[in-house]
Image (cartoon, rainbow, N blue to C red):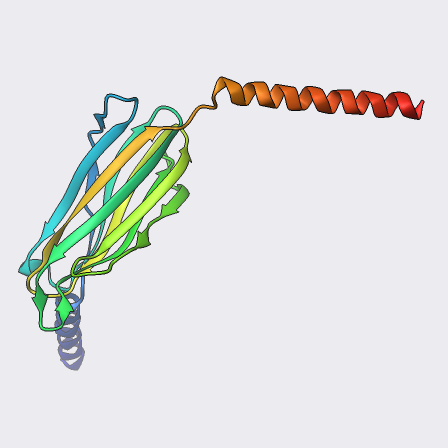
Length: 190
């Protein structure tokens, strides 16, 4: 009888702890990249939170695939109410992650920078030299107050710069000049 009482009390305490703790929510969306008519792509996306999300931690992933070499720039901006002196929505991370779609293992992470300076959270990141593969933009944060809030993200992907013909000509000229110098040194030593 005593064991049943202890077991019942343990279950009640455990249920209360689970109910009171913050939960981690993960939203995963496949992005539709829109052509910018110059060889690159754009995407706009975000998420909304309300009072039912209070104390929840989130990690949203927006997946996309690249078929060649690109550079990217992205930004995230949040809007929220203030409950007392706290922001109701707090962005804590912003990344572009390259991953293996078969194993889900992370291959490379490009980390954003918090540039917050006013009443909103602002994050920016740039990633140069992205290769063909699978990626996702990851936005992480926490809903702190009853007002919730929302964030919006802007992603721009542009073609990686290709060297101009003049650059190749200078490279060839430099290598040729190094060859002449090496040949002279060899002839002088003989």
